[in-house]
Length: 120
Image (cartoon, rainbow, N blue to C red; front, side, top):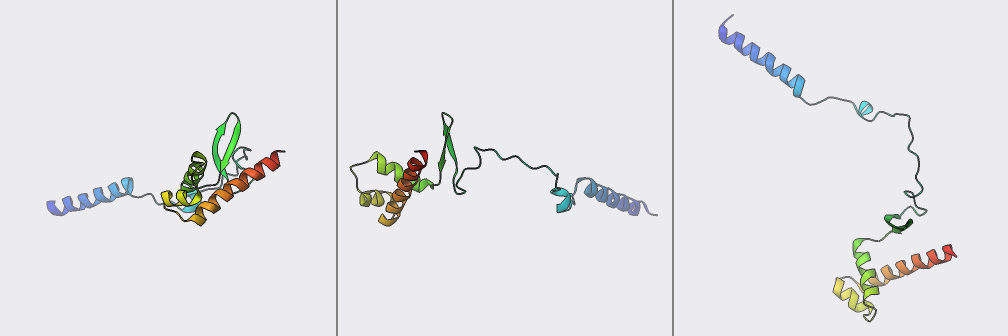
């Protein structure tokens, strides 16, 4: 066998071994996410009563849940920080419709009303 042919074969063997050692890992999805048999325990603070709520923040061991988006939070904050402004002005400033602002504030007040009723 010629010297060049032997060098070519050796190079192919080295490339094959390199791909085997450093190539992509072939693993099936069953092995990747194999069921362990363990079940996570539910924590009371993590699972709120209403499924659309998520944990917003905890203040002095009282958990506050928030279901509003960032723009809805901004509308509510603007409404309470500027009590002399009407809904139309708030809607114009935030570039939202008057109906959207009204529905957001109503939603917030309904949640607060329900909280007060449930706590009594």
